[in-house]
Amino acid sequence: MPFRATKNVSEAADRVFFGVFLVFSRGSGLACLTFAMFSLSVIEHLRLNFGLVVQNYTTHARAAGRLAAAALKAKMAMLGLLALATGSIVLSLFRPAREYQIVAAVLAGVALAVQVVTVAYGIEARVYAHRLVAHRLWMICERYRALLTEIQDGLVEDAAILRRREVLSEQVHTIYEQGFPLDEQAYESMRQLPLESRGDAITDAQLDQLVPAARKAG
Image 1 (cartoon, one colour):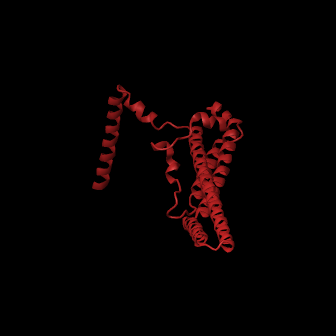
Image 2 (cartoon, one colour):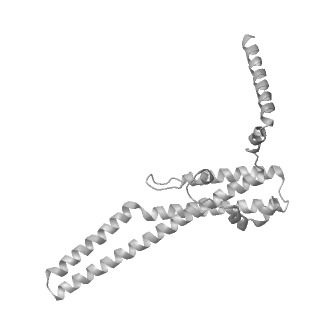
Image 3 (tube, helix red, strand yellow):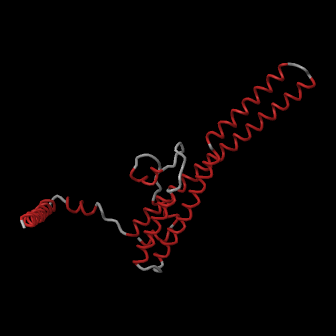
């Protein structure tokens, strides 16, 4: 009984304090600001998540492109070095001189170093990982775009909208459960890009180009 009485008194005090807070904050507009800070419609939430997924897709797609270009350059450099080393060895057969043999050994050593660095860095595995994540994120982008379009056309009920929104969020989190190597940048901070000061977040104008009709509905 004493515990229940204390709990009731505490709850009553909290209600009184909140009422006094509202009375004194109305004149300064603080109450309106407090409730307006968390004003977010379901459509706006969908657009926000859609923009984050698009931004993450772009990041991983660009990372895959950069790494693929680096892998191609490494392979071409290694082939070029091996071709020059082979040429030097062939020349040493017709012109016996230590210079050609030294050049061939140096070129072969550099080619071996390039190959070792490429294998140790695991550039091909990194390209595959980023391409796989980008592909899955693009599929999520298409589903977000389809949902927003169906909402614009009035083809989806409110309960279905909430259910599909939760499913899409879970699918995005499932994508990032894929294991990246410990020394590989997975761009996990990009999932909350609007809260960060680094990077370029996708703008409303860019999002309108992807879903123009859904923006008009808002």
